[in-house]
Image (cartoon, rainbow, N blue to C red; front, side, top):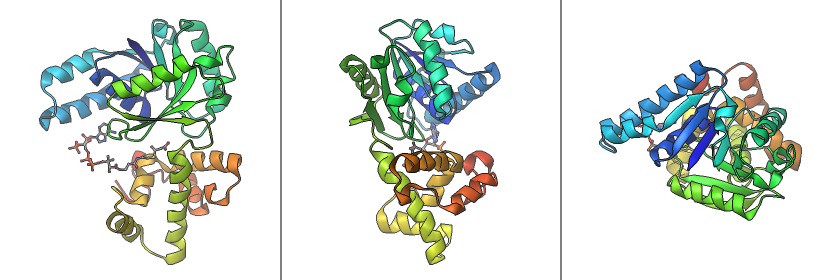
Amino acid sequence: MNVGVVGLGAMGAGIAQLSIEAGVDTIGREVTLELAKRAEGRIAHFLTRKVEKGQIDAGARDGALARLTLTTELSDLAGCDLVIEAIVEDLGAKHALLRELEQICRPDAVLATNTSALSVTEIASAISTPERVVGMHFFNPAPLMRLVEIVRAELTSDAAFDTAYAFGEKLGKHPIRCHDTPGFVVNRVLIPLLNDCVRVLDESRVTPEDLDAGMKFGAGWPMGPCELLDLVGLDVHVHASEALYEKTREPRMAPPPRLVAMRNAGLLGRKSGRGFYTY
Ligand code: CAA
């Protein structure tokens, strides 16, 4: 099996890492070689940490890294059985990408999208073979989070859906099946919940540290909501919130003004060095 991953940001690099660790020849595409190399460096770093911690041996790391090919040319994905896109969450950009992939890839190749807040059906509508498009929604950080949502769009074929599900299992994930509704399963719950947490910050005048302690030690969360927002990225969260609010018009989906202000000020969390916390 040959897999292509388009976009090697935090999510794409994590998916590519999972794929090569699962023994799959994987081709990662970025817009510049420098960005691709940076992602490869991050993957090598995480695999080396696993070696240092005795989770894998050096041979397994080297074997995995040898299965990763980098490219800037989409045409190099021509031989892929499955292509997973993890590019910017912009419908126009995803449409343009799918149109190109439809020309390049074999007719039976499955095209999966890692979108978290856009409609898979809308994404698929750009091409003449929408039945081959399916959602594969991974969670951040992809190598560590066990879940992948396999999302059936209106026209997704059983074959494409089954391929995505089987690949999720091959990666060692716990796939769940769902339909293409706003936020799918987890974000439909998690996004308004995180927004509520931020509203509580303002209402109860609790500190981010204490709110995080509250949810970790009082509700068993693995990390507090402010830590989690910093991990996900405030830009990503606000964008997803806005997209879900636009679709559902539920007030809790709308991003709280405090988060929008932080996003606008460039306080994006870990990726920018500062969010609720300083890194
Ligand atoms: N990629 C690969 N490996 C990574 C990694 C990454 N991005 N980040 C960390 N690791 C590796 C590191 O090597 C790390 O070990 P070292 O620090 O020794 O190098 C190792 O994983 C384990 O890290 P931790 O010891 O920090 O692991 P932990 O046991 O504390 O768990 C966690 C970390 C899994 C992130 C846990 O805190 C957790 O489950 N947090 C909640 C995360 C969550 O809810 N994510 C969903 C976000 S929402 C979303 O993604 C949806 C969306 O559409 C926006």
